[in-house]
Length: 241
Ligand SMILES: NC(=O)c1ccc[n+]([C@@H]2O[C@H](COP(=O)([O-])OP(=O)(O)OC[C@H]3O[C@@H](n4cnc5c(N)ncnc54)[C@H](OP(=O)(O)O)[C@@H]3O)[C@@H](O)[C@H]2O)c1
Image 1: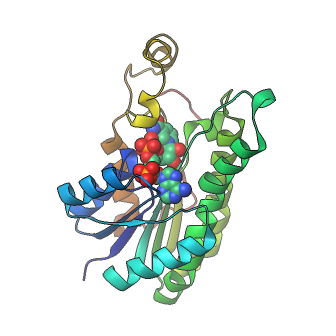
Image 2: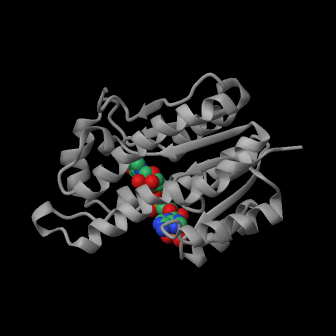
């Protein structure tokens, strides 16, 4: 029986690459998304991967959404917390709404998704939780106090929960991508990308979503059973912890 993997924000960008890679690796995959029905339906039609819509910033929506996934595919063994947003502004201009939306999605989303699945993983003595954090949670980034705080919080979440899961064969790890070629990054003006961002990346290019997806496939596998509480950086040499 193939294991079931649930990928939040799994219909676009890095998440879509993760969903496809896990599906190709033989997992039954459910891809969650927030509201872009058009992209989600196109993704489902193209890949055959089932899509499920709910907002990870709501605990109850996660409980209800997870129940639908488990009804359709079976118990979830692998959770990839990938859904994330940016609401960038310099701190002196940042609104409480911009702060709150990013913390609710990028940090509380991990609690909201992992907590309802945790009991089942403990009962079955197997689980993989893989959190997509960011280079900007490691080093901080001006204009992203909200995002950097949430993504740094994801790393604390990972390290603490890994200690709780270890005895039950549940691993919890984080990946910190650098700049990856997705819509989130393509929204950055071309001039800023060419003159300010690319010169900071020693390998001289953006990362590809598939390069993050391959790390997820490894962390999800039985081969990665001794890796827990880790943060894997994939940033083209831009930042070393
Ligand atoms: N791109 C980068 O360079 C980069 C670098 C470091 C870290 N990351 C992190 O990697 C992850 C994916 O980034 P990306 O660039 O692939 O993003 P993206 O292309 O903007 O896609 C985001 C995905 O997350 C979903 N989503 C957003 N808010 C959600 C919510 N509240 N509930 C459920 N789903 C939600 C979106 O659903 P809809 O399609 O419905 O909107 C979409 O599927 C994020 O956590 C991001 O912070 C990205």
